Length: 403
Image (cartoon, rainbow, N blue to C red):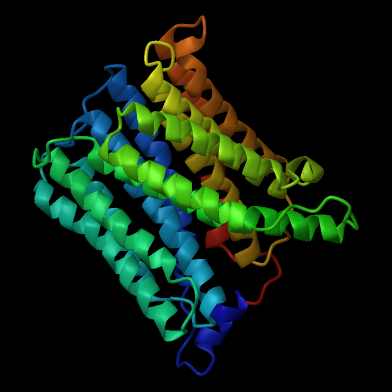
């Protein structure tokens, strides 16, 4: 049990809730990873004609929506539920509120999957409602503590709006059917740039300092980083509104190059021997790769498929970064050592290899569907291992801990 969780129970009557209700990150990380695995398996099977999905949404639209707002929504909620008490000093959410919160997320997932039976409007209300509840929780905690992390609230509110727009697009209420997905992608990429730029150089600096290696410490956030984030946010906003505009494509190329420079300033190779730190650098590397491919896909569509660019950002940057953060956070918040064992390294290897194969599939001298199936298998294997290993860590007490 973490210090914040223990503080939440001091002076309360009755026994503490079961371990799996002590912080919503436990169920949300585990459930989110399991859902990502289910979504990929269902989508690859539907793509190959093995079955028909029971959703009223177009299967590709459902796949994109669930990875963005279903899986990533759970991870963001889990991350914030663990981080906000550390930011604010306020108690961890425990007990029945955790069950209700996670239950709302699960209900939204099932309602969308079976939206040929469940009214699509009800599914949309549950889905957007989860993100609005998350916004409400975060706003209450951050404002009560007068914490400086208020900008995260803007991202959460915009993410809920993007989710609603994507539902409206699925119901034929928007002229551009993909605008909600693009908005979701833009927000998540911006979030990775913001949070990644904070934690990656900090964790790298801390590790190198503990090793006594202070000769080449990473450059911490400065005006260059703020400028890169500002340029990226404006570029992505323009891409959401005008995805095929050539000036926007050139801005995407510039943004990708700037993020590559930013990453090079963080001394990633110096942390090669610590997988928990080094994987953050590898995961962030997918962001400039994805932005560069996205710009190239607009300028030279015959040479660079849009799907490769989107999967570099989705299957690469978003999936690899979230697994890197979830493994580290689960270890830290359950009192386990911040060390990557062989199984953890395998998780990192599988998700990155799966993303690499999916991004390069159109260019390889292989059957395209075979390449997608293998990529999906590798990628799904990472999430299966996370559920089996880190789900157990999250939902059980560490050996030797008091009951």
